Length: 162
Image (cartoon, rainbow, N blue to C red; front, side, top):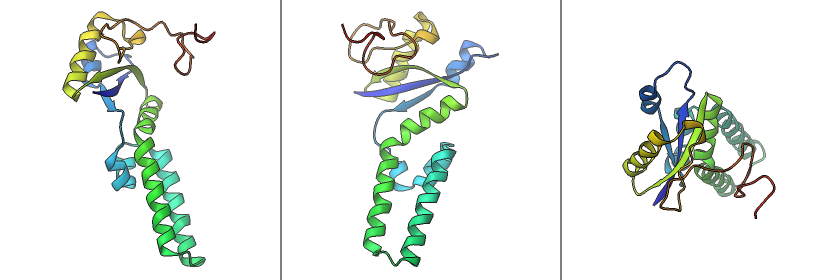
């Protein structure tokens, strides 16, 4: 079973049907596309900040390889490590880019396939308010979260674990 982060657009002038039609599910896993072709993947997902950082790093690496005569094997390994890092963090960056564009993290849902996750999310969405929606991934029940806004980490309360 995989975890999916669900991002919904801000509900300005849209109906619930339009909001659901624009939902984006991001699977929590390594991104092979981001690893194999980082600049294309970053550009396609519109993650401009990290695309710029990637271009600068690769430009410095190429300049170092030609001007300082770095070992070609070393430059290849560094480039591979950069791509691996993008493959690991890329989906998280995609979610942050969506939030900057006005989407909100509506919940985290678990499913064997994307269709299972969508079905589970939409079933729960009908019975819960969108702002407080968190589908618990490790329990059979789908209860609303008791977390307060601004809490970071696994603790359900600002005062810590009880």
